Length: 366
Image (cartoon, rainbow, N blue to C red; front, top):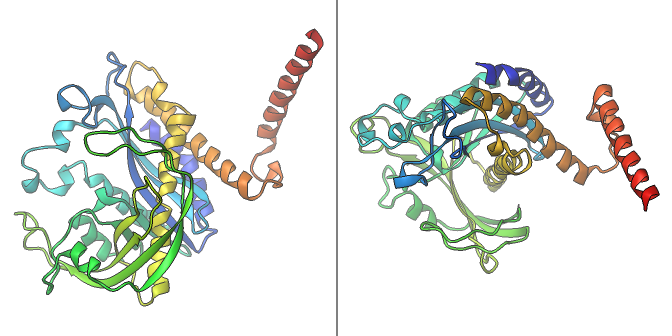
C-alpha cells in the first residue's frame, strides 16, 4: 500500500528516536476526515453520524500510534492506517454476536499488536500504550494482560464494569475508595464549543493547573454477559480514579477512571500512571495540526488513494511542526543544524532571502 510505503522511512526514523529513551508512550487515537464535498471521488467511506439521516459523511478514518517521550516530546508515528469505513459495519444490529475481529473497533487491538511488534525492535525501551475510552474493550484487556511486561497499557474506562467479589461496580467502587494523594497536572487551553445535542456550550478556557484527588485499587473485572464473552476468565488490573476538586467556572472537571496493567505498588506508581495518561492530549494536538495547519480536509482528488498519499506526507509534516513548536518554546536558542540537514537549510535560506528582497522592493516603491 502506497500510504505505508510513503511513511516507511519515517517509521524507521521514529524507532531510532525511541531507542534513545528508557520509556516512551504510545498514544492511539482515531480521527475522522470529512470529504463530504467530494461527491465524485471514488473509494471514500462513511464517517461519523452527522450526515443526512444520520448515515454519516463521505470521508476517511485515520487511526495512528503517536509516540512521545516521558518528557512529552513528539518522537514520530511508527504506524498508521487510513481507511474508508462503513457506517453499517460500525453500527450493526447484532454486535454482541459479532467477533471482535469483524468489527471496526478491532483497530484498537490491531494497533496494540503492532505496538508489541515495535517493542520487539526496541529492546532497551519500555513502551506504555495509552488509549482513550473507545479502547475500553474486554478483548483488548485480555491481550494486554497477557503482555503486561512487554507493553503495559493505561486505558480510560468507559464502561462501569462488574467486579469480582464486590457489591459495587467499578466506578462506584472507586468513588467510594479513600483519596490516597493529591496531585497537579497541566491542562492545555480548551477551545470554545458550540452547544450540541450531546454536549453543552463551552467558553474558551486558557491553560490551567488542575488539582487532582487520586485513589487507586487493585481490581478484578468480570467479562461482559454477552454470548461470545460470558465464559471468559476474569482479568486482574489496577484502577486509578483522578478527579478535579475545584475546576474553574465553565470548565469540564477532570474525571478519569483509568485501567492499567502496570503494577501500582505506591502512590508514586499511580501518579506516574496519571502523568502517562495526560500526554494523550498530544495526539489531539497532532490531529489539530493536520486539519488546521496542513488543512488535509481541503484536498480534492479523483480517488481516495490519491488523498491518502497526500495525508501520508502531511502526517510527517504535522509531526515536524509539533516538534519544532515545542522545541522553540523550550530551547529557543537551539541551532537549526540540529533539526535540519544542509539541503533543507539551503531551501529555507533561499526562501528567507526571497522574502527579504520583496520587502526591500516594497520599501523602495513607497
